[in-house]
Length: 234
Image (cartoon, rainbow, N blue to C red; front, side, top):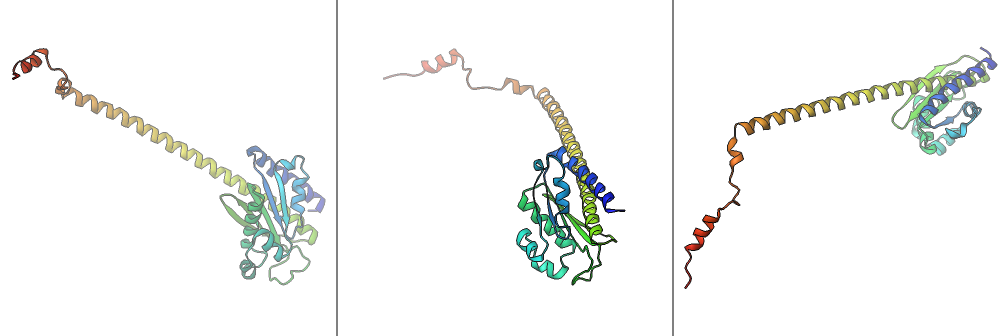
């Protein structure tokens, strides 16, 4: 697949993701490393991007990842910059700093060399983070530096769409479950009210003396007079 064709794929995938964002009034941010702003460009090529896109980061060096996105140096030392852990931390850092609803991060090896890592050229990790979940996905693309960068962005967009759809499906299932629970609780409440009314009616039927209870306020005039007539004053 050529670069021009992949560019069209990127534009189409970006548009698909943006439609999902706009439906719910959500915003997105991006943290890129090896793609150098290519994903950001795909988003800002869409008219009206300022309504759902505020800012992004190109943290090409490890120092920038730590300083700008809060990636832990220990994670970089242990896992390397091209790893699931770093991808997630990059996404979380961007999400927090941009105050967005979803973040995408990309960290990979575009080539032509692999520098000081043992990971193969074409390896990429994409992090996706929201305010309630975060995960990372990886793939390997075979191509030159330019093709890999474009392939990384396309993979990131498709991954974000998949994660978004999964999250929305789970949220909808959870909403329906909560509605079912609420309906069941209301059903039980109404049943309890009906049964309580029946119990009260039955208790009243078998205890007629309750209707004839003495209130202490109905003394007859005769009793008042009889009490008063027995008092003698000296």
